[in-house]
Image (cartoon, rainbow, N blue to C red; front, top):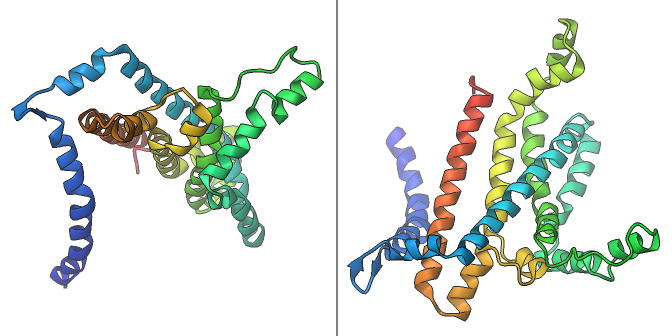
Length: 272
């Protein structure tokens, strides 16, 4: 019986190997060879160049801040939704997921109208006398963070709702009956049990923000992130070697982040 189950996994494994594992291995392997000789020159050149490092740091900053904002906004929203009746929960989840049904290009152009110097936010700030002249919000890292938060917040909410709705409300009542305050009960009972969903959501948001192209390209303007930098080298400059180095660095960062998140999950919830 067990052998027959493994045979059922074979088509999926062949598909993943042919279209994901082998291309990733070939991409990373090609970065260590230049002019038929083994070398680390591509990576040394990348990490020595201040311009490249600035792009990498900007990308990490945008990804980390976006993830934190999605956690702060998504956790209370998911908790509120998880405690509602099934019918109302379905309506609220549909509203939360709605941004995913809109094209990233449409969302980004909408934010360009809102964040521009003559956009809704600047017009409101100037009209209310809060600022004397329009703020430069568009084409900045802040604009990218806003757009990416709008893009990936539904993923955080969905990941957390699936975990929080399975937490028995009687656990909170039991903790409070033993003398714990509502905040203490939430911190000691709900939060540890919600860690798996929190980790999954954080990984999805961080990796999505790290690799996103459309939103940073439209809202960032000349502000480069690693995804737009990779596209520029591959499609505009035709420098496929440097593009492969950048892709390899993105892959390594992704694996490191997943490993760190799993370590944090075990620390926050040792009992799994």
